[in-house]
Image (cartoon, rainbow over all chains, first blue to last red; front, side, top):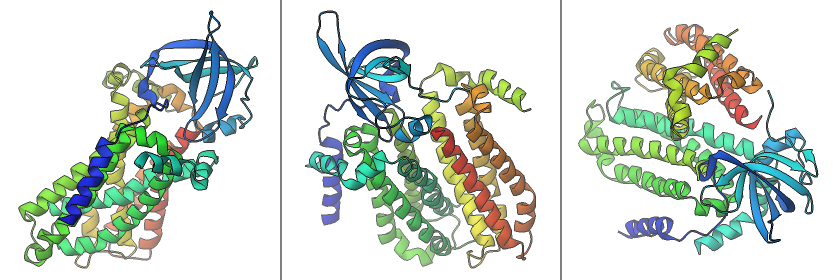
Length: 126
Length: 161
Length: 153
């Protein structure tokens, strides 16, 4: 009986505990039918596994700044292509293309990325 | 409280090491994926014996004695590799519905053999050589196959959320 | 050399669903994993039998014969789900080094399973039992590792 209660408690926790509003998404959360291209300035770069993330500011025509979030392949996949933790530094100018998050949040799944005019390769070209 | 645990875990040295290493993450993930064979593959063989599909001429207890140590080794590998993968992305996992479902299913999948071993399996000498095992044994086997299939599927779904 | 096969896979109506439906790819991945569990289970048990870790009543010949249908079924599932997974990028994948390695190792593992390995499992224990078991385990493990490398290179 006691074991059953512990079990139910754990199960309830798993099901019921509220989620946060974290901005990280998996593939299904991005609209892969349209590619958007943005220009912005890097504010942070997380060179990690399983997905690297670049945070960047985009200024619109009215001068309003929006914080964007770009998902890229893992550190393990990018390192062999010459990426380092310093490949993107705060202040770098980005031209970045990708699939936008379906729920409208300022989040991209990157398809191409140029930093300070130079393209940084994401994938194997065969 | 669970959220704070995940926040803390996310920033431990080991979590950071897994995230920032070029090799650790792929190796750990490989152990986890290939470990499915050792854990779920062996459980499936045991379940199929209980369902009378394979190894019909062998005693259930003999099959268990051969297979279960392998399953436990597999479980050890899965638990350690899974914990490391979880630590590296604790907050993302906390939020991920596929991950939550997988954890819930793992709990149930853990309870299933406990119930089985403390009830119908106690009298295994009575039906050790049966091809058609007692209803409760077959039910446990079917539940096990279903649960582990769903666990593997929800594990794969994690990347999509 | 095998390019026509991959061209066929790229264009097969059977795999059109992979392009047309978004849930098809994850489902194919899941089928690939489930079949992997079963394939691995049978390969493990038969080879452990050859290495002397076996059921008290059983001869490895009986075990291998008993598990053969499961082995074939799970192998077939892995091949079909694998083809489905590469169908949308079949030509690109054809030139990918890790994929080529995996296919080479898979061919070796399959041929081995149907020839020398089968002969040894159908015969009484001999001095070939152990080396054949070790080779089989190593071949299948390397197929799995090469498959993982596809995602990381």
